Length: 196
Ligand SMILES: [Zn+2]
Ligand SMILES: [Zn+2]
Image (tube, rainbow, N blue to C red; front, side, top):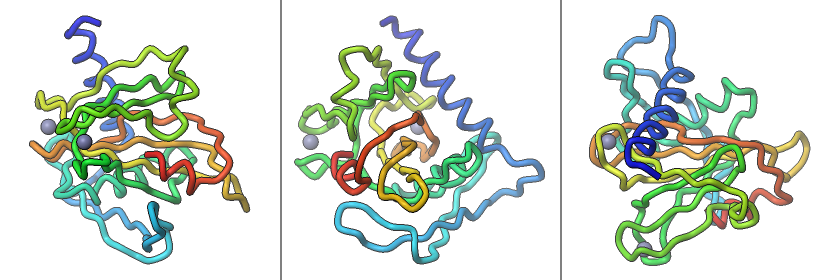
């Protein structure tokens, strides 16, 4: 794929996210309230935690990877599939920065560790890679190494996943956005989140 297409794609995804995240009469800060508790590899929404995203111009910025959750929560509420459980992507080498490729039509994403180079299909993406046309993501600032956090929405009174949101934060400039979201039907959210 041509470099220009990659840039266009990342800007498009980023712009969609910004548009969704845009608030009328927004002041300089927006507190996204999340509820969390430790749950082995993933976290359940149960305890109130304030996550603050700073707005500069049209863009949202976070100070740490934890701020991705606030952005995913805000974005997911607007599309009607509120994220309920989250998991951060961590490589087996311990690194938390990845190059990300995804196809949100097919519902597949692959992360590549910026440190050791290991590639990993996120969640159940492995089942959809054959038909996927993965496009590389990157921050509009030019950095391609991103922190990744996934938030999932479940069916009512169920532990089964119905929608997946993939949020990223750029460690260089802090820009935090949802880079992709898609219908993901998976039995048992905890198993899915263990494979983020
Ligand atoms: Zn690694
Ligand atoms: Zn950046």
